[in-house]
Image (cartoon, rainbow, N blue to C red; front, top):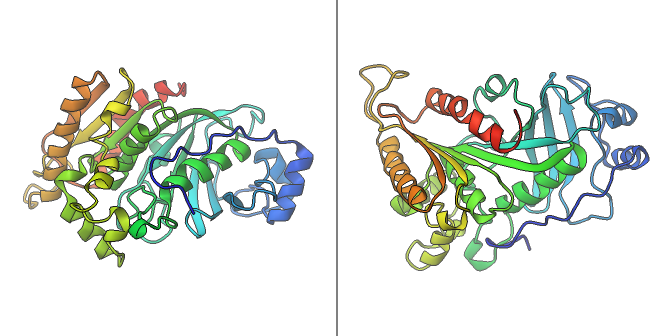
Length: 346
């Protein structure tokens, strides 16, 4: 069974990787090297990416394939016990990754919003925005409506366990095979904004900063909307966190707003949102965006409580703006200096 919410991710230190271990593991996994546009020989892979997880770790996530599609973009295919299937993650490699084979790198997770295609890891123009950031930029699959949770499944838990996939399985692969260190930040948009602030508060020792862009960061304001999103993806809403009344405690455990007090004083948080009225990236006659207006109220809730509890809050309630990519990309650009500084990626 995958971890229920509240179980700490496995933070055991990765085993040292030697060239011999790397070649053997890659041969077992059938993973080739990271030449652009292809999956090539195991010996070449050792020069760039250490090996897959040891074969003895049968219940651990395992790297099945790593395809280097261009200078920075690495597409990972992962066997995930937490999800009960194979899953995807994309890593944008930092400048100097190839030329510094012993260096370990900080990590910035970028979490996507809802309702994309199955297996989607896209995050807008993140590659250009982070082009000069000396960190691994990781955009993992989060499901069309996964809500960054280990699903309750009527009390049975089990797959999909998104927390476990991201914070144990993907994290281990980053540390053991892509030379990640233990300095991490997390940011996300919409559903991913919820995920970013929820993960940071649920596991406060894992992350050094967090950011939400138009995030669903006070779920108590949108219980019916969340259930409709899940239902709209052909899933059973009660499988996520149960009924909002009967399982009210479970809903609170997954509400980033309710968990703010778990974050240490001074923790850096960036929160942005628009008010739903047409803004500089919208047509002047666009219909007001009701969803963004609700998310702006959530941002106000979160900012006020976080400030009262002593967090280091950057509040960017920028007024006119809708629930669309140009605003989230602008917010990533604005928040990136804070996120990068928190993890030493400057």
